[in-house]
Image (tube, rainbow, N blue to C red; front, top):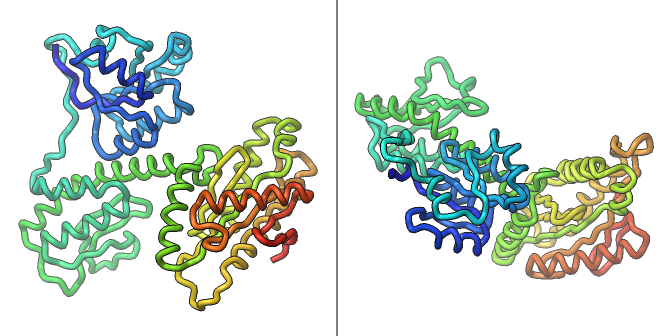
Length: 414
């Protein structure tokens, strides 16, 4: 019997992992119970196989994310007897095989072991003539994003050649410039030598040729990593940030705000009578409303502000000073009010086509505004205060945003 190539990652609840571990000493795996932790692990190293428990929410999306990260890994679903029929219908285009839980030791070993003489083709390595192993490792580790890969290439090439190099757009290079490398990104980029630099040594040119060969798979890896990162931090329906990322970012941001003494304002809002729209127009129309509402908020906020969906029709927005205020008495809360007011105005002017001919102005929101550090010093404190203000807005007739400590129902005016 020959083991299949590569390690195994198991994404399953703790109890399931314990039972599978006890079945066979021949099948060992790294276990992760949290999907985000599993995807993060898969982004950092290669696995020969991945086992995914079918009962995780959004199982199909999870399978696609794993496939995007680990194209050559075997994907094995772990399903209940009741879930087998559904899995068989979709398995052809998604997972490679499945196990019915709880499996026997023979069934588990049969998935990952093959008879003598039946060998798998090993995945291609990263051996690249002309490049030292240490340099390759640095480049691979930097391929978590396109930007970090570009920065590492500049460092590596500068070190090999002793020259000053820079990336520029392919259409921005002059005819007399000599491109050292080309990168098929969007837009395409070329690596140029500063014209004041010395001549490139022949040994350095050999390394550059080898690096050019390696760049395509590294760019593909960086794109997969970026895609995973977006998947892990965004809400699948609206494209806004998800609840998990919102809490993570808010905690970090408020820590920085306390140290660097800048201001943060949190807006918590939901859609008035959202259930009524779902009941009257259907859940597809409700999904359209959520998507369009999130898009409007992102359009009316600044690039660095954070818009997140943290519940069914509940959203949270963090307004913060990307740069320190120029004046000590800079009126940050008023800036947040202006931006929130722009959103309310855009909401009133937007046509929600899913709601029929009376779509324009049909939708309203109620919200609460709380500011750091006056109304709270942690994300949960601010959410609690903003939620209280939101409920006050609801009880006072809806279609309003209340600010902690005061009332403001005219935020639709800039």
